[in-house]
Image (tube, rainbow, N blue to C red):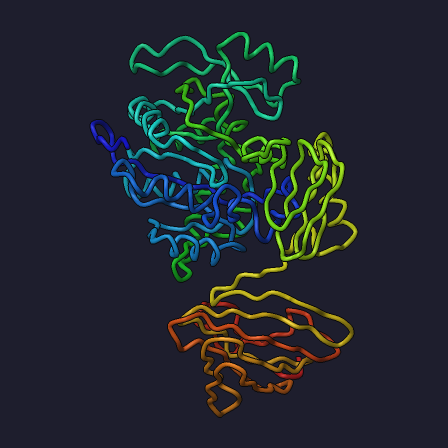
Amino acid sequence: MMTEKAGPFPLQPVILSGGSGTRLWPLSRESHPKQLLPLQHESLSLLQQTAGRVSASELFLPPLLVASHDHRFLVAEQLRSCGIVPDSILLEPMGRNTAPAIAVAALHCHRQDPARILVILPADHRIDDEEEFQRAVQVAATSAAAGSLVTLGITPDHPEPGYGYMKMGPTDETVAGVWHLAGFTEKPSLAVAESYLEAGNYLWNSGLFIARADTLLRELAHYAPEVLEACRLSLEGAERDLDFLRVGEEAFQRAPAISFDYAIMEHTTQGRVVPCDPGWSDLGSWQALWKEGSRDSAGNTIRGRVVADGVRNSLLHSDDSRLLAAVDLEDMLVVTTADSVLVAPFQAGGKIGQLVETIKLQGHPEATEYPLCHRPWGSYETLAEGGGFKVKRIIVKPGGTLSLQYHQHRTEHWVVVSGEASILKADSQHVLQENQSLYIPAGTPHRLSNISDAPLTLIEVQCGAYLGEDDIVRLDDIYGRKVPEAPSRNS
């Protein structure tokens, strides 16, 4: 693996992890988007693979992440589980596309070193050839050191209408392996994509950028001053929150929601491109996952508990314990999760984002919420619910502690499945082990902690007239979540 540091190294990786990935619904949702899923690995998410790619080489400094406020604890936990300590995690209060995300990262890095070179990476892309990736980044960084805005262009091996394209201009005389950037094309027709492949001077748009922090700010000030000013104010109003830096919400919301391509790269005179072939894919659709996945002799990509008979050129994905059985299908997509099923022909894959919007408008929580909900202390999953009851499986990581809280409308009954629980109930302390249980009446302050070195698993049975997640009054919380100044049990 290439680790030479001749030139302007080490570089600052900036990982953008704010997308929602609705085209991969029902697996990817706003509350648990595709970059946080193990789509191309048995256990590592795309974010973990991206962070690992820039953490195993001396070419790079510890990564800086720009992530959604809603995903903060899951992002932090995924990095921790891989042994990766980030430089910082900047939290966006809402998604405003890539230009504002890159602007806050550039402003943050500029405070430390205006000449620092940023390598801006989407968290949800696949790269197979890390040596080729590092080679291309080193070439791009050499050009960026002189003030260029450099992007990596992927050498196409087939006409792909699902990708954006970049046109190569003349070679850059100052750095070998670099070309001037002559223009962008958004997702052309198949016929146009075929002509691009034949022409030989078009590359796929990877969305990876390399530039100095001061270069980025200079170009933003010239071509997107509204973005830069809003992000500057939001960073000035940022607040430290545990291991996160939360940018100011009101100012950040004023930033135009625009991509870095549209805001800067399509206008700058300093655009350069480095052609490369690192085994890249943006994994932006189910059809892309089918193409990039391992296929059986009938052309099928199969994952999970699946039985297929007479099925050809299809993707069958079961994401829970249920058996997915399919007969005599061709060019089809069938995906099941614990709470949803998607069935569609491959040619309709482009309509999935629109379908998710329809599901959302109809008020179905499955449009955005995932059955497994992550929290800073662990996770919970709803197993069953009906009139007046709800059953959850709760997993508390070692050392995890829920907030001191009470509920106005529901009672809770906890049964320990494995591990050891320490429970504060009103003024008394209880220690529960496997097969032991405790009842929590409505209105009773309580706190659950895992005091062992192993995960704590328990079943929670809720009963009451109202079982919404907002029936929580927090009295104390080690993770800084909202605690009322003067909690009232009648409010």
